[in-house]
Length: 197
Image 1: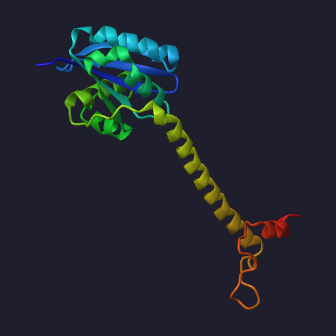
Image 2: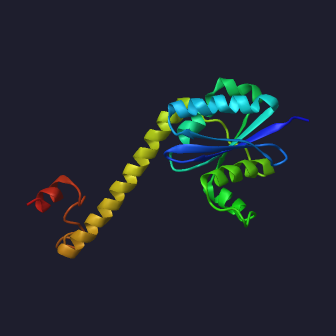
Image 3: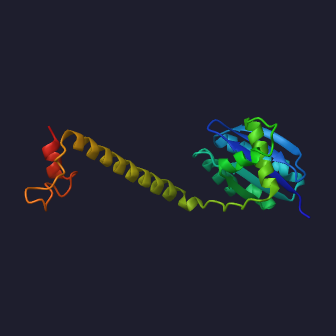
C-alpha cells in the first residue's frame, strides 16, 4: 500500500499557509510562504523535503479569486514533484466551509483553513483537478477579459438607455408613420451627433 502525504494550501494575496498531513490525520508539518515567485519556489522545495518519506502526494488548494492560479500552475509544472505522482485538488471555498461544520470547535484561521483543506482531500471524496496547460493560460485570460468587457458594455448601454428615457422619453420612439424608428442604432453615429452638445 502506498503512503500519501496530504498537503492543504490556504491561498491569499499576501501569503500561502500550508499544512501537510498523514493518512491518519496527524499534522506532519506546517509552513508559511509569500505569494510570489520566490515563495512558490520555497514551497516546492519544502514539499520535496516533507514528501521524502512518502510514496504519493495529494495537494489541495482553495480557489480564491486569482491568487491561487500562479501557485497552481507552478506546482503542477514543478518537475521536482513528479516522482510522487501528485494529485491536484482545486476546491471551491464552499466545500471547505461545508467540511468546517464537522469541526464544531475549530475557529476560522489561516492555519486552520490549511488543515481543513488537507483533511478534506484526505477524506477522499473529491475528484482530482487536471493540471493546467500553460499553452492556454494567456488565451484563458484574454477570453475572460473580453467576456467581462462585453458584459460591462452591455450593462452601460442599458443604463444609458434608461437615463435617456428619463430625459427624453420619446427619443427611442418610432417616427411619424410608427413603423420606423428614428435611428436604427441609438448608439450609432447619427444618434451620437444628435445627443452630443
